[in-house]
Image 1: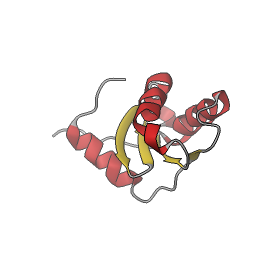
Image 2 (image 1 turned 180 degrees about the horizontal axis):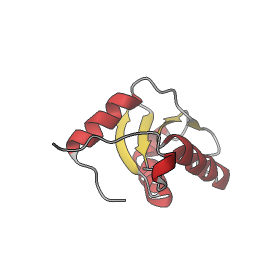
Image 3 (image 1 turned 180 degrees about the vertical axis):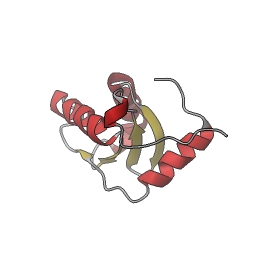
Image 4 (image 1 turned 60 degrees about the vertical axis):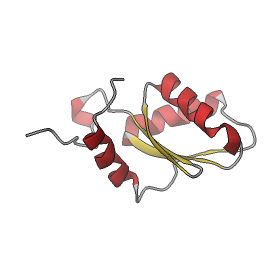
Length: 102
């Protein structure tokens, strides 16, 4: 995924403010099942939060791995919560309309 401009990243972080975490990373770390759930959530919502209940020390490395393996972009890491975005490839199924420069 290409890197989003700063204004779009700020817009998406604003949209994510009221979201509840969709995925919890617990004692088992990142499992193939969790990668599947992350992909399903990104396909459906495009913008999700991931909470780290365990592995808090490795959260930067884990979020980079999630972004790489899911083709998404890390928008921010606030405390133990990561904000991840991946645009839906099908324009008809897109939930979020990105702002365009005028």
